[in-house]
Image 1: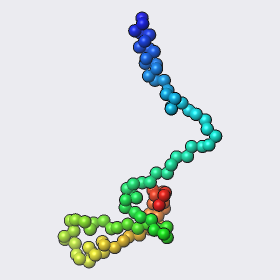
Image 2: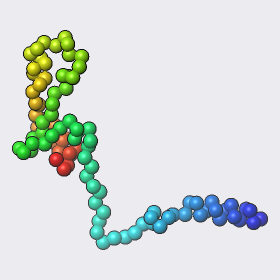
Image 3: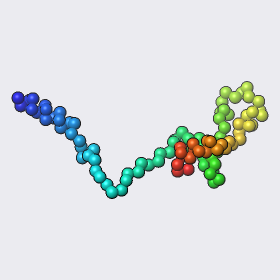
Image 4: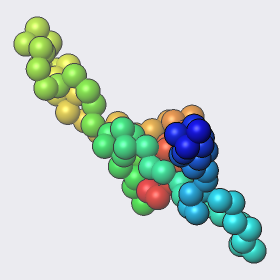
Length: 95
């Protein structure tokens, strides 16, 4: 009988809430932090005008068949469009 009671007590205790999980009521609302999308942060940089710029893809390797004009065009910086800007402002809140 003792083993049955101890098992019941231990299993009930395992599911009891720890002090950290107990809900507390605060006067100030908890605001979640805005997280930066790391994939976008590594590719896009914000500039002073509020626009974003990035380097073009496709210049690193497997481009031996490209014309010299195409490779020199890939060297240029690309700026975000109006639609991309709207999305990037959400992905990069601290930029």
